[in-house]
Image (cartoon, rainbow, N blue to C red; front, top):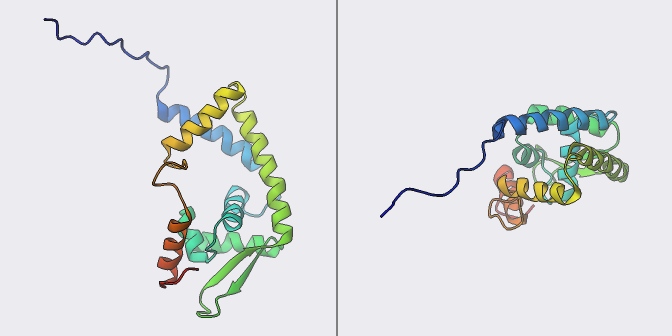
Length: 174
């Protein structure tokens, strides 16, 4: 009896995953930064604004935790965004050391404009793929990163509340 594996070997790729992802990421980052010129903090400012608009807990500590940013860096980002009238910081009525961040009406309009610009960059970066391949790639990448809706690791309301509670040191919802 032949016990050898007759499964054909996967075709060898010219580059490894890390190299391909790094090349794609460099291209993406360069183009996104160019598309976000004029937004305080560039891509980081964009991420902060998008998170504040999307999630329920807007304390500075929770935002820093969610985005993996140093609190000092976040403070500088928020300074720039607030100076331009895009976000507003307000003290927590229960603990004045805590600041809550809210996106302003001007911030919502600005975020919508820059979101469209980032979507255009995504289309450009993935333009070597046909539309079906690009959609498949984005779904697959989200799944591989653990960010798809079916993945238990994806950010959700319960996790946001948990981060908010942990950073505020409270058991109440934020």
